[in-house]
Length: 194
Image (cartoon, rainbow, N blue to C red; front, side, top):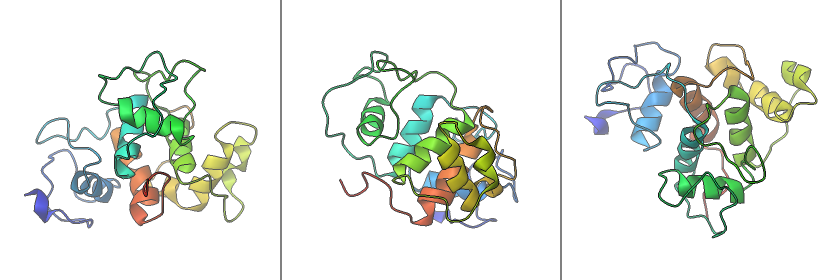
């Protein structure tokens, strides 16, 4: 069944909660096909479920091809070698995708905000500049301002059919949509060739 997945609306998906015409349908098909994430069960994707910071960074790491981190030093006391997200977090720290929530903490179980996932994706794309002026300029001064401007000018917010709300908890649907419309569109991401 999974071999039938295409990045087009209307193709069969195993998830009963991913409706035809949902803004995230293509993104879910892409994420499933490329091993970014599966469902929470064999028949449920749970598009409205929030993601932790560990889940978000793991999705991003998988989108980059699961590169092995080149550093052995783990700067985070709350990330241990037996965690499923260990390599993803080390890779993200090494590539400058995240610096944690403090010098020694990543906060893997904290819910990921929209500002955080957009910033992670932007940093993984080597911090590109926004190509045209953006309405996101209103976020100037915040750590995510440049990331939001870039995402806005690339239609990433439009793809979710919602306004960007930096403090809103990011859902599985919004995260795979952000990834699909940036990384999944063929743009190069840090670490893909490492």
